Length: 330
Ligand code: COA
Image (cartoon, rainbow, N blue to C red; front, side, top):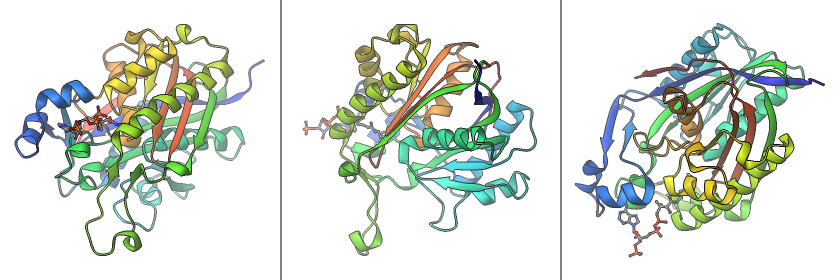
């Protein structure tokens, strides 16, 4: 019996034009191209020009997703970011206004690298509750502005970028229908991924910090368990999943998850070599790359899963729809 569902109808991305590779980092940090490639799978990442804001990346990715969906209007906008250009107000209303969406509900979500899937789940809930017919979900990040350039543990990993999807109301029988969700958090790990506030740090610099090894182990554990829960909800065995699209933090995390889940390694999408870890934006960017390389095909049983600061984790399952992603550089 088909039930109302939110359906993925469009996919857009935007990357800053400037790329910086491992050699440029090795020239100023105690690291090497070889270490970064073998320990993370990353060869290069993007950096937004000084006059490009997180909101500019968000607007471009959002406009591209609308083009991909063939729509001019949607009923709401949710924006996931860890790197707002300013603490207040949220960026989503301005992005909605710049995209000409009218007086729609628009708000930001902060769940670090899990933000995109928290936003997708919230958007799908608004749609299936009947509050809106469609939502533009955008994830945009400018991590190069918050990582300490002298910290080899984070500076080699993160890059800037944005991705977006359009969700519309449809039925669970349609390709593109989001069929299962899983969300979770554990605040006891709040210090593992962290930017201090003014009262915690005084006048010193307030850089992003990450306890890499501990986060690595928790990420494998939680994403594996969360992905399994959505597969179970759909009645899918791991071996029947066509595309596993995890948060793109580290190629070794993705391989370890595929092994634990017993998903064939070639079905685990790993698309971080030229963009690094783009936090909330990593899943839509990976989806666009997997489409470009035909790793993701219409009808594919697709599982998305993410882990990030908070700590937070989330997964979603869908069958992949017929669509063409629209991508640009800024
Ligand atoms: N270049 C060279 N050496 C480095 C380095 C770099 N860029 N970064 C760390 N090292 C060193 C460490 O100092 C350590 O040296 P020691 O053994 O002399 O103390 C050694 O390499 C191993 O460090 P470790 O932190 O155990 O490495 P790792 O294999 O865990 O890789 C990360 C580090 C950050 C790449 C990895 O832990 C990671 O990807 N973490 C998770 C990120 C993530 O999932 N984020 C999700 C939310 S965004």
